Image (tube, rainbow, N blue to C red; front, top):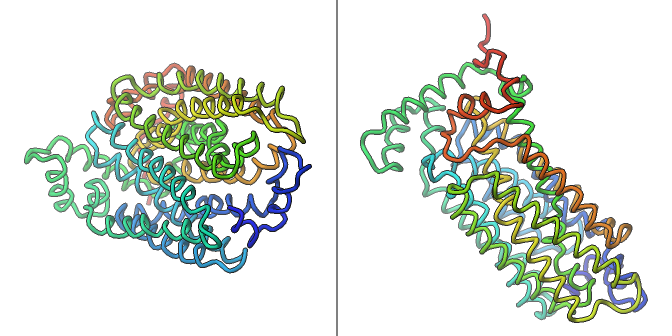
Length: 458
């Protein structure tokens, strides 16, 4: 928004409205990128603290702490009077993201029955996409509210923050977390409640066994470094890296910027980002329906083909038609680019988006689950920070080539999925070692070592 740029990034405002400015470089500003990406650096740091809190005090309290960070962040950003204040606000929002991303997927995986675990966990990603859509709509309607439309946009973020705060007070703790913290009977009571039946002995005994094993592990982070934990750790970290190197966050962060680059005006660019937001939501709904039927691998592989084709065609169009200065694309070409971006977003939203969170949340055994997921969250935040901080500079330097850069990564992702990612559809969380890792052609070699938890020798 121009009012926001004039107040905090006047140099960017001037470049944006300079008639002869390079089309690819008009938004290249490290402070603007820092405003976007500092949130994810804060989330990276917070995720390791959140891991400890999640294990020691439970998933519920971790979500409550996340909501408090969100509320503080909203107050600082919406009330910002200088660049330092809004960046500090973004950092607090990042702390909230780190705590929420640590607790929520674990919470969902632990309360879900195995046959619905994928769909329920992807609801986490679905509501993220709904949040993105709502934020795009808010920006569209407030962009012409002068001079404080940007304050309204940032302030309305307080609504979901308050919803999370109240909701996290009302929900129950997961049975696994309660039993892990020696509240055994309360855990049994909650398990009966969420399953809706009295006889939960088999599942309860399975959780008790997992907790007993987990208790013997004195240092879960050290356990993660052992070969027996290598498959889960490598896959979780790689999925997070690949998720960011699809280019999705670059496109979603800067969709209005990208669409202005190819020739849309400010309002039209925001409207185009609303369209991509709608595609994002509906495609995630498709994933909820399909993931526990078709499985994880087929969705990831299909999406690689779809995203690769979309990125390559976008790159070719921009390379041939969008010059560094002067005219933008024709109206027809610009609309075609929007369609291709939507096709790309569609492929991501029913695959790498939700499954990048689902798979890490379901493949770790209890003794390393919280620590392992902390690695996944922190890796995601680190590479989101890197892409967020670098994208506008990359767009300026690489121009249309940036889409070929991301397309090349999609090929690597597809190969990794084909050869190294086993199917986890319908497998109980605590049966992954026997039913998945010991059966895989590559990862089973890491299971030869005695995989019992490390018992501290006195």
